[in-house]
Image 1 (cartoon, rainbow, N blue to C red):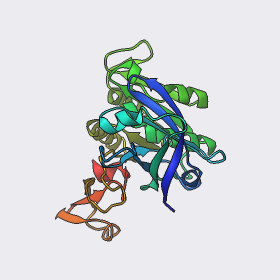
Image 2: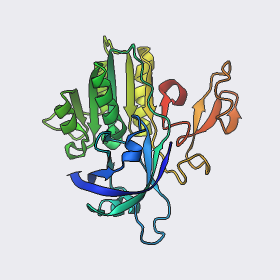
Image 3: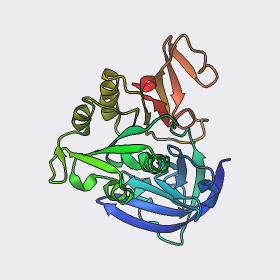
Image 4: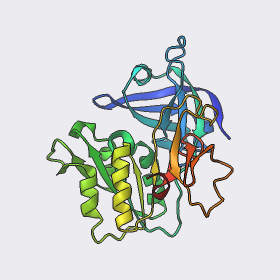
Length: 277
């Protein structure tokens, strides 16, 4: 069941230049949420600017304590205001929302690929899979070393992580994370791939996964006005198998025979790689 109401800020922590982690007292959401889902936050209760809520992936949660965490980068007015919210203040929130990642019990080894703050929806998933004794490897990419997200948390979990920094860093590979992925997939033995980041990166991830027949899922990011499928503002083109009838009830517009639009907020934000790229 989706919760809608106010929650209290427990902690606001700066993790890098313009990158923050926000902990919220949200037991109603923690009891239901799964990896890949998101919350819709109103960043201010002082007036109507910004008017719309902002979507944030669930980075982590503590079900027993009822603490939900998001990690975000300041990119505009809404996230700028959010970065100033402090312990004890309240925020309007809806969640959990969206379709979670699929988890396959037969998977024993998975690979995750993240670009920058795109690691946000993968952290919760990595921790859950680790509890299921699934071997998890993570590739983290960023333009600058200080923009890497999640490295410290992965180290605390004992999960193997390699980094790729386009401008170079003594901490890892110099170049794009997809270059690192291409090397990683040579002779791979992974059962599945999960990824989140810029669309240009995800297109490359999909191309490389297809080359070695590795199935996977991605989490797409989008601006959302309503977050519940009413405004259609986050519609995204997906490829539909014409022999399948599974999507008939959820698609909102047939553009071509094999292409339809789906709402990232409701039918996503997670999609199969084959479906979106």
